[in-house]
Image 1 (cartoon, rainbow, N blue to C red):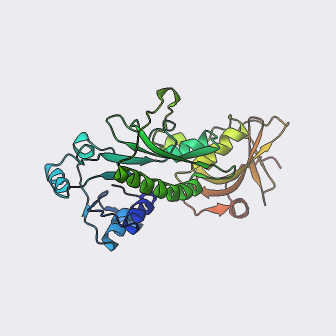
Image 2 (image 1 turned 90 degrees about the horizontal axis):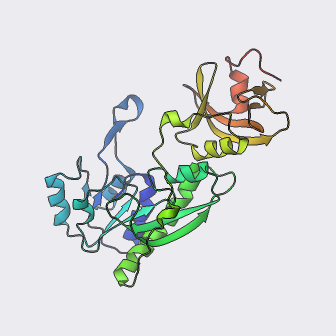
Image 3 (image 1 turned 120 degrees about the vertical axis):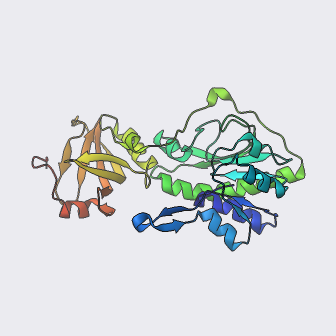
Length: 304
């Protein structure tokens, strides 16, 4: 059970290692692309179709038709990677249970956006966890964990791509352990739990009253998607890459400095955020020099 690209290596590694994946459950096709008229299939559906695996795309997971069809496959085990919350009728169906792969070292960063929040909080390490599903989201007993470093200049996109390969290895190891019957669970220590809630556009706005390090991590944690942003002369600017600069100048938060050619930096607590790659509203992604060379809406009083 999964939908995005993150889940594809986990399905692929099971298929390549000879496991009988009797069916795949994924999201319904959506319309998108230019003009919203192109029918888009999930990466998992594309993989399953190419591998001749039956695909189920239920609108409602409690639908009697879906439940009947799912039960007919008589799966011994269900593996969930980047899918939606399951009702008990679904996760309690297989005799060996349902196991989820989560993109954090649980109980830290429970929720929809663990990769983003780990970087935003300045973590230097994260990982993946396989656990057995139960009622409360991301709280089930842990079977396996594997940690990976978060590099100083890494963003959510690069961490995502590294993590999905590690996740596949953990999914395979999880299935092999369950198959062997020689495994034990570890309870999640509730005292260490933290949240990683869903990210919304309004919560991605940069607060330049924060420290340079806090803003730098915020930008990394939201890059390349959905993108941290600020407004400049009424236009929204997404910041995809930046550097932090410490300074004793005590700049005013939000204060702009630029040579109007190669750099544009913005004051914050204890220094500046120097913009490197941005996406202005209605335009393509560009370097800061490209932006400055063609910009028509920088403030007239910008400090050089």
